[in-house]
Length: 252
Image (cartoon, rainbow, N blue to C red; front, side, top):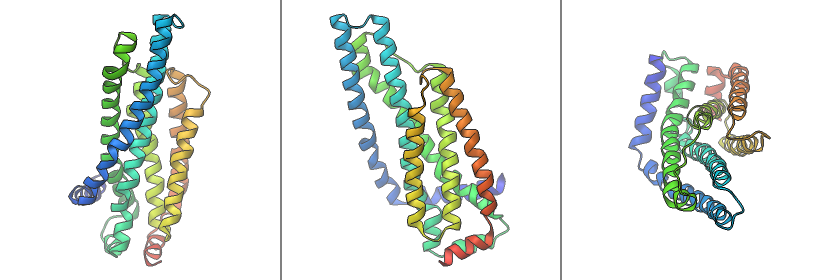
């Protein structure tokens, strides 16, 4: 773990010292504001139904809770993956452009340690930003819409909280591991970027299309099962990761 941490800390310093990182943070409002606006429209409709008697107070609360859970899960996943997409450019691809990847490969570090260290460097700031953005969205949604519409503050239930702070980050970390591995062994960066976008939309669609109540424990169990499938896929894909493939891809 110590050698992996060395790679992670090295890449994190480069990410944090880059001016491009702070420019990239300007996408925060582009993710946050539209999400809150769309959510607010849904809550306003629920509030109107409550006023005219279409919903009881309990029904309005439950509908608002489900809407809040869906918003938080999607915001958590999309924001983390967006930041991962941005930060990944400072990890493997910049090393290949600067032709410094071969020098890193010549150190006593194994190719697996380099891979995991770089994946963590992309994942950690993305996870912190994603979780922070989701927490801010929950507070803003309640203060701006929920409290005034139905008269109470709604927090995420325990099962949904586990999904947002454990399952979603674990899924994102798995996808980052896959993407980083492909960046190391594939010479054409465009192919990896296309695959990364397919991962994002495929997983997002898969998560939200599961015919299970998002507020239930079943949804949490489904997300854990999905993480297990991704873990098996990563173990199989890791067999392709060799120093020879990494060196050849950097020359391509």
